Amino acid sequence: MDAKVCTTCGVEKPLSAYRQRSKNRTRVSGESYVYTYYPNVCAGCEDQDRMAAARTDDGRRQRQTANAKYENTLRGWLARMAHDYTVRGGRHAPELTEDEWLALLDRYQGRCAYCRRPLTGRARVGDPSLLVLDHVVPVASGGRHDHRNVVPSCWSCNSKKGQRIWGPRLPITAAHPLAMPSPAP
Image 1: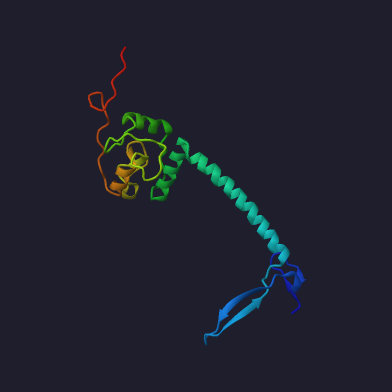
Image 2 (image 1 turned 180 degrees about the vertical axis):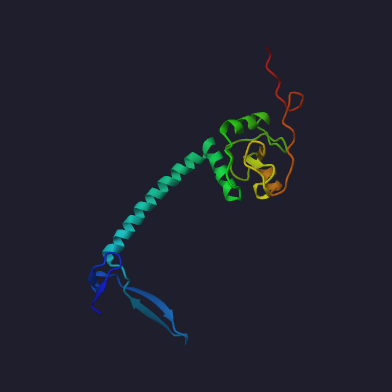
């Protein structure tokens, strides 16, 4: 066998056009040996495949960078939450709009709905003051992804809550001690 047909380009080429490969094998008796073979793809097609993969990797990196930038925006974060909702069992993701989420944050005055800790949007995961969107009734338990079932939560309350149903405290009102004083007229 002095020639072989490349499975990619379909052209019969001499064995010198293929890169010889070898694998270390072990016989049943325990004796090791080297198994040498020629792949079904010629060296030229293999190089083209590598170059195409490199181009794909560059494109993948660009998409990942763009996606990361988008997910750092409020709209991207809410889209990710809606995607996670459908992945975790929701039939269709009701759209939680930016305005609804910002209204909820306003309603709770930027504090956790459970412990009233002030929340920050830019913190590292594990930081107790990290702002997290929490479903009061977990999606896995049949909860919906809409403004009636979503509250702002700190990372630590959200992780403690897990799949259980906790009732959030009522939103801060003017009579609440944490409420901000109203501006003078």
